[in-house]
Image 1 (spheres, rainbow, N blue to C red):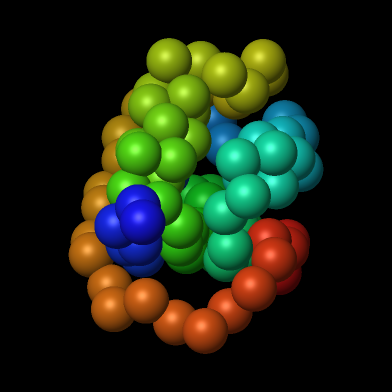
Image 2 (cartoon, rainbow, N blue to C red; image 1 turned 60 degrees about the vertical axis):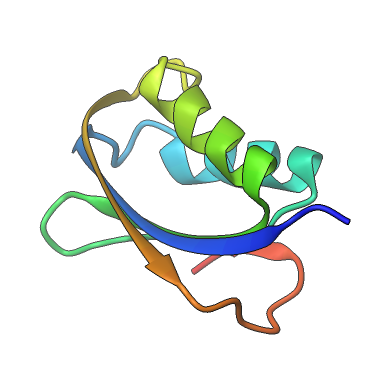
Length: 92
């Protein structure tokens, strides 16, 4: 069984009004991840991502490498969290 992890991630840069949340949700759902993604008042985007360690790492790497066409991720802050019972992935 794969190790399940949960991360709280905050993305900065050009991440609002460019389809970031929608693209992120689609990628998370394709990977079978749980959690949510939401805009913050200061122009950043926050996400809670839960699932197999490799898949959580894959979506973070995908964002770093420009996987979201119009977005430009300039910074990523990552915090480990205890896994929650949330299922599915949604936009808040």
